[in-house]
Image 1 (cartoon, rainbow, N blue to C red):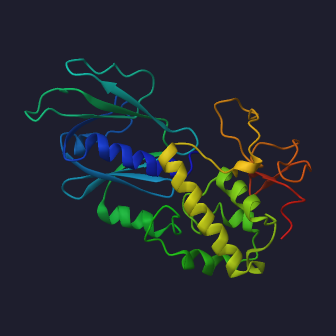
Image 2: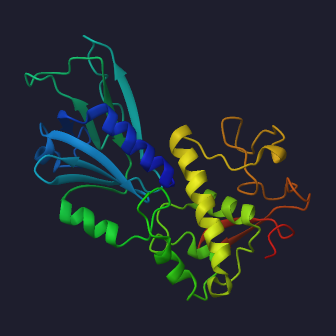
Image 3: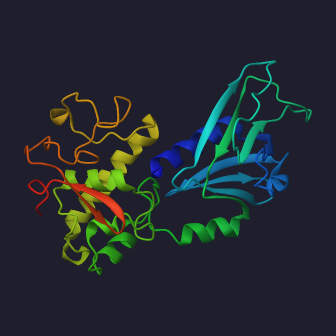
Length: 279
């Protein structure tokens, strides 16, 4: 499942592509019937919180997208005078710029195709506020209040490894950032939240703020400190990021040499080093 940095990066890019003008919104797959409500409207901007993306339109409407496990966006750059490529496969929603006169695309510009999301719906701004209200603070939100997350963590007997993945506690943290941030902090993922000290939580929060901001800028997850990056090929291929523990079960820890462990916590795979993560 895409983590929070992916949605914030998409919000930035979609604002860049479409803000300030009308857009054509269609549903080649036919499953997003409400597209007609926003088709032809001015695209104001896009925002994200946690793993949720919002396209904000004139008139107080928004398209709410949650990618889920399988959703993703394809982006097509169309040169001036060229036609956009025909949709291929199951495209839930297509967005493209509109010429000022209301006609077809007058490039160069972008088309964006959404495939396989868990949710794609038109809501109003009150609905946007409702979604945001269900979520914990987002490390990528400069106005986020980490005290909200600490209040829940410090009173919970659940493992910190589970709490970091709970979107009602922290928004946007997925399996990779959970595993990597806990390793970098040296924290045992099974330690109950109630046993954490505030300084330990603050260190994890500050680290997530920094790491996830790098993810927004680069489009990838970068967590290894330079002294520990040996240039090895990740298990899932050279195009994947090199991590400390995520998907490195059975391999030697970059820091201590012990075997990275794998188990299941709250129905999600958990990776950790039993030697480095003892606090």
